[in-house]
Image (cartoon, rainbow, N blue to C red; front, side, top):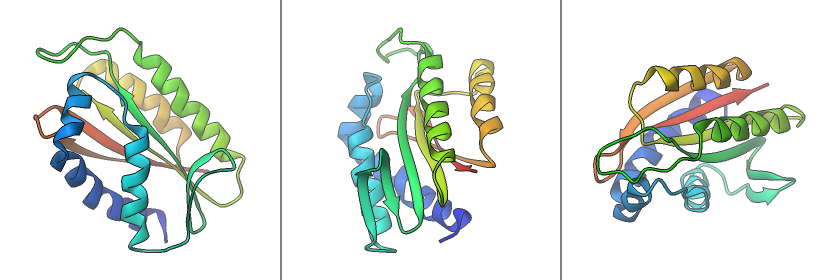
Length: 161
């Protein structure tokens, strides 16, 4: 499967699955991460296309056919009414994605990083942070969506060389 097809499949399925899960809206409200759940859902989506799936092998979250995929859930520290404030700087999350990109770049094969960012709006600060990821990816796709409780988020997928 090529990158554009992989992205198309994931962006079509994942935002809908996130919005349907009322429990995930509690995670978003509390700025809590849900990477374990995300792994399960991505595997569920990809299983429809190939049974050749493995998880947490060779320090990579998901191996799908010839793809190495690293996953992250990125909780921002931007202030929003009615959403719990947390002080962990977003820069730590960005650094973690950058480390995943560096780790993937050493692998032979097709590589992608997939991450969900929440809560999010179109702030200048976010444009600065996402530009750092864009510089390290050959392609970076994005899809806005909302959780069940209308907290805004974006799904990103980057092709890593």
